[in-house]
Every structure is written in structure tokens, then in C-alpha cells.
Amino acid sequence: MDSLSKLQAVVFGASGYSGSELLALLHNHAYIQVTHAFASERSSAMPWARIAPQLAGTSDLVIEPFTGDTDVLANVDLAFLALPHEASAELAPKLLAQGIAVFDLSGAYRFADADLFAQTYGFVHPFPGLLAQATYCLAEHLNANSFQDIALYSIPGCYPTAATLALAPVCESAFLDPATVPVVTAISGVSGAGRAANLRTSFCEVSVQAYGVFNHRHRPEIARNLATDVVFTPILGPYPRGIVATCVAQLRGGVSAEMVLDAFQKAYADQPFVRLVHAPPAVQHVAYTPFCDLYVAVEGQQLIVIAALDNLLKGAASQAVQVANIVYGLPATTGFERFLGGVSARAAAVVDSGAAQHD
Ligand SMILES: NC(=O)C1=CN([C@@H]2O[C@H](COP(=O)(O)OP(=O)(O)OC[C@H]3O[C@@H](n4cnc5c(N)ncnc54)[C@H](OP(=O)(O)O)[C@@H]3O)[C@@H](O)[C@H]2O)C=CC1
Ligand SMILES: CC(=O)N[C@@H](CCC(=O)OP(=O)(O)O)C(=O)O
Image 1 (cartoon, rainbow, N blue to C red):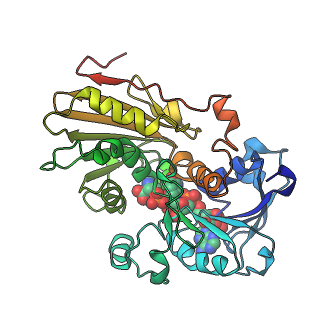
Image 2 (tube, helix red, strand yellow):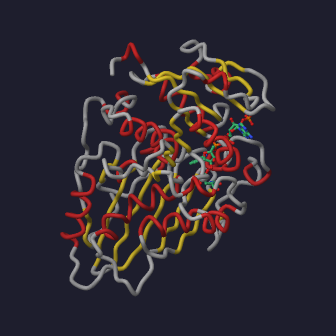
């Protein structure tokens, strides 16, 4: 594909946090061009720069209210849905029927099983038959055999992206003690809850507080991805964006720090957006970037992996663009050049094995 014949894209939910990040990433994409950007029908048309003032003057894109009329999308190749789960669930089949590939950032198509979906998301899926046909797209786990027949690509949740990248190398290697359950405790910035005004996320209410104890909708998604039950506790933190997930697990007897290091190096050696780092990562290390940083420490049979990522980017928009690049056979780093500076793979793995870990 040459950049003269760019794929034509539409972004739904463009006035929201992850939708606006998608517009920013696609603004710099050599092969994908946004031709339409929509907010809900409640909104009035607005210049994108009103949502992203830092980009004022670089784009004349206007975000339009979406009336439900998909006829205006005649020449569109692909759609990104940064919508509430219910709205994505309803819209996806209409777009697919028009031959538009769908990249859904919501949770609407993350489970194949309709009962598990209803239990987890609290509503009956309007198109249960479509669930098993969607492809769940953790970018680092996709390969040529991953894809189903229809072009419905479900982007993982933000916490599940962090927890799965952190624990998949040891789960897939069967390194964990099967009599124990990994424990994931993750703090998220407030943008994780979306842009709409809400008492829970208002300035005077936000503190540092756990929520969704034992019943957050991401727990079954993490458990499914890792093929093990998990204990998952999310925490809302008083900052705008970024997740730090601390994942604690017990290794089987006979599994050494070297074996763990080797598993992480092999898993991420060719992955430009996963960085194995020498010290526990901070939110500031990954905020506004498409990276997931992983810090691995082993002491005896105890394992701690700390993952950090930007919930709006690696946890949502940049992962969606990564997936689109894979689906269309584009170079993995397309659209991310400004973050990578010519470096294509960054896996410089370090496992701390029991030594003091303060820098
Ligand atoms: N925030 C995050 O960290 C992450 C979010 N996600 C998922 O991505 C999706 C979007 O999240 P986020 O960006 O936070 O959401 P926001 O609340 O910030 O934005 C929601 C967007 O959807 C639009 N919208 C709402 N209802 C409808 C509707 N019925 N029809 C059409 N458009 C509608 C809103 O338009 P308007 O401005 O007009 O209301 C707005 O553009 C959600 O499913 C969320 O779970 C996934 C990973 C991380
Ligand atoms: C801080 C906060 O409220 N975070 C959200 C999760 C982020 C999100 O939007 O969830 P998905 O990844 O499933 O789409 C929550 O806990 O519901």
C-alpha cells in the first residue's frame, strides 16, 4: 500500500478520552486517514482542537454528532469504536454489514460466551451470535492464525493488557505453582473512567481507594487470558492517566530466576512496545507513550512483576492502532515513529533475583 491510497477510517467516540487519542495517533499515520469523527448525537459539531487544544492549528477535522445514519460511511474501510459497551455492541454489526472492519475499544466483544458476557457486563448482549466470531486482540499475542473470518477486532481492557503482559510469559511456561493464585493489584489514573462528569471522579472526591473488590469486570478477562483464576483489585488514584499493576505469584519448585528471565526475553524480544526495565516503572515513565514497561523480580519461589502503561494509549488507543497495523500488514511501528526514534526492538531484560531493588 502506498500513502497516496490511504485506508479511510472513522472514529466513533472521538470527543472522549480514548477517541481523541486515536485521532492524534492516526493524524501521524502514513497509511490510515480519518475521514469522519463522531461524538454522540447529544453533542454539537466541534473542531477536534477543542478536545485536543495542544493540536490546534494542525488539523481542521470536525467532530460531528452521530445520528445513527451509516450511509455517510460509503467509502470507509475501517472504524474505531471508542464508545460505551452498549453502543459498540449495537453499532458493530451495522458497520460489518457495510464491509467496514471494526476495531472495538469497548468491552462489547471481549468474551466469546454470551452468559459470561452478561454476568460480567450486566446486560444481555444484543448480538450474542457475533461474540464467538470476534478476534480478541492483545497485540503482542496476535499471529497469522489468530484471526477469525469476520473483521471484528476486540481490543483488550486496560488493566487486562497490563496484567496479561506481566504474567503471560510465566503462565504460558507453566512456571506458576498450580496450588496458588496470582494476585494483581493495580492503580489507575482518573481518565480510566472516561471524560463525562461523574461524582466518583470529581476533583474533591478522588483519593486513593480500591473499588470493584472481587467483582471488577476485568477479573474474568485477565483470568481467561492467563488460563488461571486471579485475585484482582483495582485502585483509583489521584492523577490523570497511567496504570501501575503489581502482580505477585508463586513459582513452582525448580523454576529459577534465570528460567523466568529467559521466558520474558523470549516473549518480548521482538516487541517494540514492551520494555523490560531495570527498576520498578513509574506512571511518568509511560504516560503519553504506547509502551508497557515490565519489571521482573524473583526471590526464591516468589515472583513480582510490575507493569506500567498509559490506560488511554497501550491500554486503549495505541493498542488499537498496533492491531490495525497487524491486520493490514503494515510495519508494526507505523504511526509511532515519534516515540521510537529509530529503535525497533527494546528488550533489554533484567530480572532482579532477591537483591535490593531501590535505585
Ligand atoms: N478510558 C480508558 O482508560 C479506557 C477506555 N476503554 C473503553 O473505551 C470506550 C471509550 O472510553 P473513554 O474514551 O474513556 O470514554 P469517554 O467517556 O471519554 O468518551 C465516550 C465517547 O463516546 C461517545 N458516546 C457516548 N454514548 C454514545 C452513543 N450512544 N452513541 C455514540 N457515541 C456515544 C461520547 O460522545 P459525547 O461526548 O457526545 O458524550 C464520547 O465521544 C469505553 O468502552 C471504555 O470502556 C478501554 C480502555 C481504556
Ligand atoms: C479508573 C476506572 O474507572 N477505570 C475503568 C477501567 C477502564 C476502562 O475503560 O475499561 P475497559 O478497559 O474495560 O474498557 C473501570 O474500572 O471501570
